[in-house]
Amino acid sequence: MPDDRRTVLADTAIAVLAETGMRGLTHRAVDRAANLPPGTTSAYYRTRQALLTALVRRLVALDQRELQETGDRTPVPGNAEELVTGIAAFLEQRLTGEGRRRSLARYACAIESVHHPGLREILVPRENAGRRVVQDFLASQGIADAEARTVTLLTCVDGLVFDRLVSGGSVSHAEIRGLVAAALR
Image (cartoon, rainbow, N blue to C red):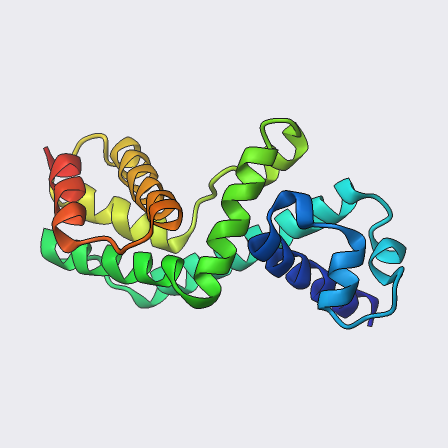
């Protein structure tokens, strides 16, 4: 049960952070949002840093699982338009519903990690099947530095997510086509 409670608290902390920002992330706010007695969160995560670290670890675990599952069920695209369509679906996930909530929390944690190197180490992008699909596509198109171009392309995609979270709106296929075309040059 303790591990389950820790997961509930970390998931709730993600939601609180997404809804209220870094300043709103408190032990009490997590207790309230989880409908738990006051002091529950601090009993499991004594300090704010411990709570934030647990939140970041959970966020990364959720993201990695999602990226792994997506990559596992996605064949390497046969052409650039298939990659564009796949990236568009990924962006839709990151900008709506639970994906939006996690994206908001992820960016708040990324900013916070500037001041907390331990968080930065947890947030470092990791290898996963989703990333490999993109890299394998670029390699199949004759791109010699497919690994570096994959990192650049996915960093640009991440930038689109950030921009749309901040400014609103959606990402057009034309924008994604431009990024894919640049990666293929």
